[in-house]
Amino acid sequence: MDNTRIMDAVDAALVTALQSDARLPLTELARIVHLGTSATRSRLMRLEEHAIITGYTATVLPPVAGFSLHAIVRMKVHGSLFDQVNDVIQQEPQVVRCLRITGESCYSIEVLARDMADLERITSRFAKIGSITTDLVYEVVTNRPTPVLVSEP
Image (cartoon, rainbow, N blue to C red; front, side, top):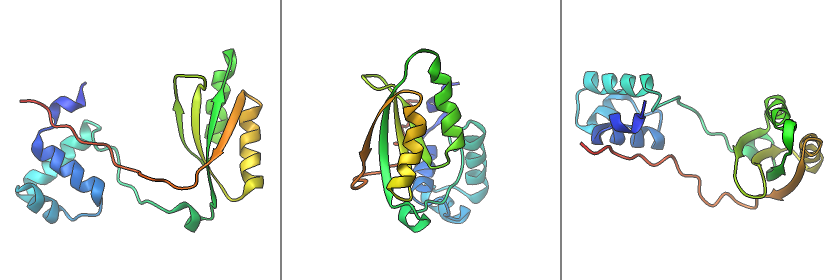
């Protein structure tokens, strides 16, 4: 199902408000979108049922959680070794994002590490599967929520 076709301007406003603050009370959400709380609750349930809203999370800053390094690992993998990438990712909770991409690399993998030894431990597991290049992140310049598009009537 094309989920973008079921969102109108009210749904978009709800999703945008929740991406800004997922802890907004239902009454506040209803006020923002100019609906009653019952109608707002129904819309939220529909958005969840259609997997437009897939969860509510808390954001934790990596340094507060003990991770002083943030790295991007670009990896090139050949042949039958593709299946092993997912195995390593599943075993390494410090891999916070993995994208399969086009270009010279096959994957772009975001890793949080306590220190250089921890980063080396994780990247060495990937190096056994394919060739890797690791870049350290100085700063996350922007980290935006998913833009919300309103369907045409």
